[in-house]
Length: 62
Image (cartoon, rainbow, N blue to C red):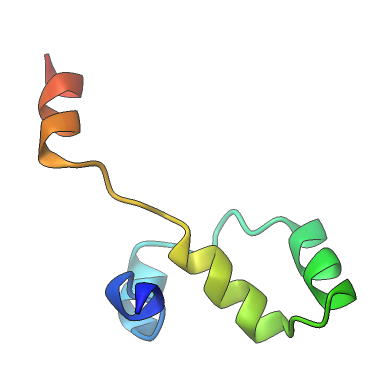
């Protein structure tokens, strides 16, 4: 569910929002050591980004 809600399966949006831009190389290495494929690890990484709430944005804008 989280992956679908956070544009993981939308290649155009994933690229537009650069969800894979800061993927640490060690993340893939350690994921592989516990049996997680590179594709799945990248999906986990892309889904970890959380947009700030409206309240948080208003607080930051002050």
